[in-house]
Image 1 (cartoon, rainbow, N blue to C red):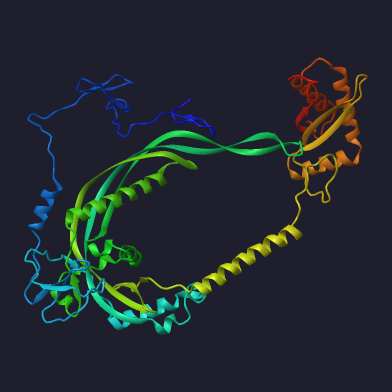
Image 2 (cartoon, rainbow, N blue to C red; image 1 turned 120 degrees about the horizontal axis):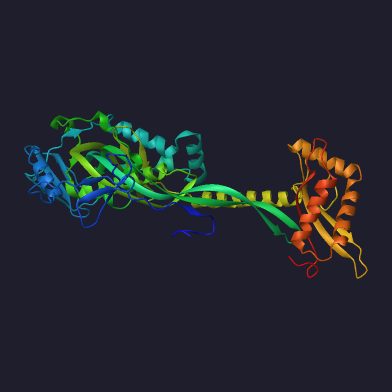
Length: 511
């Protein structure tokens, strides 16, 4: 039994190691010999020395060093003519043009706002995705979203949203903000091992609640250890550099309005900020790389799981290393909107490039309750109708013919009474009708029923049982099967009955 065997099926093979090296002489796998600097082939015996360069040492590279070198090449944002608005409630840092007035935070609506000078060390973005439409178009898109998009969207709004929502939802604040992001490119090399599962089916016999012998197909799983590797490239993996979008609903809403068409990024120019605001990044390059790496690791695992062969898999282990990373700082366009309905505020985000809209919206609990009650009534009515008029399942065949003879029974049960001086014995015999296809099996069964063959079969079974009083149930079943195969054959040759089984009264026959 293998390490991870279970009742569903066997496990084949052994868990493979992730790294292999081919033999230069025969191509088989080389193995490292512990305590030495030699790789040896277990197939042809060829040895290969591991070469260690003179003075070689283990070097540890720090991401902070790469970040420092990167930051040294990036220009800083021009602060002349700009100032920073800091919200003391949520911590947002918004860069606006000098002379612009604001009394509330663009994100939380807070009024505890402090005006500051833009710090001199703020990095200038390498790229920017300009807004593709103005605030009036953003409000129009918001109204369409609120009314429902598409047939099912409009139906959902009618069923669960308040009827007056479209007319009474008043837009309070709408700001076009360039949100800071870090984008990461990276190559990933993944090695995986797993148990691949292959389905197969076996016939199981059981006794149902009426005491009748039945058969069914049970699914089993054959497990095989397997392994593989893959290389992936991730381009422009986006991580938001604003802490505001890791709080409350904003993180979910930002994910829902993605993706942004990063292939349309243009070199940063201060002119794109005219008339809009830009948020200063509050999460640095290293912090966001940790988030990007976790996301890439999860994606690598998903892709490796799709590479595992078979019908299912388990015990998937993935080891991934990243190399060739690159990154840049960009600004992406988002309309941040807040609206009120019945004294309650809701947040909405609009992708300033694609127009995708996501946000919160109220539910009408009266409509929702009516909908739930209607659905429950519909389900209850369907169950009641099925119980009254539904087709009743056909009982297992007991030797009689069903109403509609459209196919031969999968299992035919034939009770045979054997008369003895010391008391009658009832033998329960079951078999299936042989045939090359369903039509041939049906014809075989009909002939069995129509020609009186059943009584002849009963007679042959009785004669076998009466003549043998010593054999156990297994040996006697084999004798019955051989007798029926000899006496009853198809026109083209071959036995007329398959899978012959016999059961005897408890205590009368031993196995």
